[in-house]
Every structure is written in structure tokens, then in C-alpha cells.
Image (cartoon, rainbow, N blue to C red; front, side):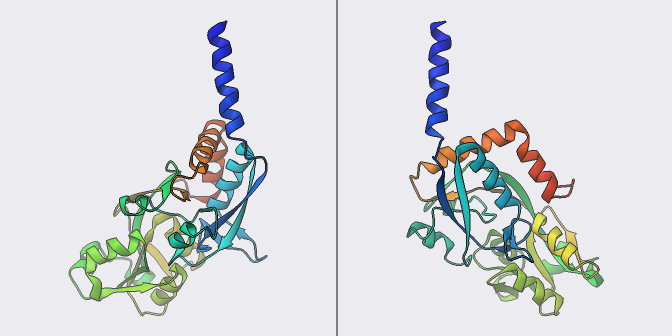
Length: 245
């Protein structure tokens, strides 16, 4: 009985610590990255990350308010206190982990190359061993991989992936390197014009991002574990991603 009481008290203590008492959290996000976060026709920020944060907040009693911000400079903005956290399909890297704190990974994505339909026969060597141009969003792991593949001279960087995809459609570049889940969203948006012809280039774990030392990391890790356990996480994944993802 004594052991049971101690265990119960410990569980109650953890549950209390995870109650944020309705705290409103500002969430910095580059809301141009479907299906993770984007602005719908009604002007609302929607997407996988939005649903994940809302589900976690249901568990730990908080409210997430997304704040659109440019990807370039999003981490310094977090450090300066412009918002409480970042949720923007952020890859966990050792370099970033030196200046911010990450939650446990909440999704792993593979990088891919999206091309125009007429170029669907391209393989990786067509990019690495020719003069074809790749595009990516500046400051991303996608851009890092693209530079490894083709070098800086044949890499075009854009402020958003929307701009990179438009450059591809306009014929300014020959491919866009992007996470596979986001690539699928753009392929659906531009059905018949784009395809994902090269996939599985590398795997990136994604995490929610916080200021260094912020106790919110533990709260959100607990909330993430809870929605994995109760099945809500799987429901959100099924809503936003194809079965292959």
C-alpha cells in the first residue's frame, strides 16, 4: 500500500507540473510550408504542426497562437523573446541544438527532389554530374544537402519554398530539394505539373523549438507522449499525410 501511495503521489505531482493553467503561448512559424503550416482560404493558419500543438495543449492546458514569421532569422527571434516557441517543421541538428532546446522528435521526414513532370526520369546523378540547377529554402537542411549534391554555384536559394517551387514551374531551376511530406503537398497543389522523382535522400527528425533552458520542453514532451499513447497523434498523421509517410 505504501508503495502504491508513493507512486500515486508521484503521478499527481507530474500531472500538476504539466498543467500550464491555460497559458497562451505565441508560436513562431514560417506559415508557407504545407502540410506543416500554411494559411488557408479563410486566412487561418492550419496544418500538421497546428493540430499537433493544439492536441498537446489539450493535454497540458495551454493555448497555442501561431505567429507568422520569416524562416530566415526565426531562431534569433525566438532567443530575443518575440515568441515562446517555434513550430515550423524544424529539423533537429547539432548546430541548432547549441543555441536552442528541442522537444523529443515528433516526426521523421526524408528529403526528396521535386521536378517538372516532363523531367520525371531524372536521377540524382543528373543533378550531381551535370549543369542542372537545384533550389531550396535558405537556412534549411534541404539547402545544405543541395549544396553537397551540386555545389553552391548551381544552387538557387529562396526565402520560402513557395518561391522555390514557383521558380521550378517557371523553368528557372530544374529541381527543388524539400522534405518528402511537403513535396507531396506541392505536387497535389500543382497536380499534373510537378512530381517527386527522387526520394529518401536523408532522414531528418523534427522537433518543437524552445529557448535554452525553458521548462516548456518537459511539458511538451509529456504532452507529446500523451497524444502518442491515446492515439490522437496517429489520427493527426493519418489526416495530413499519405499512408506512405
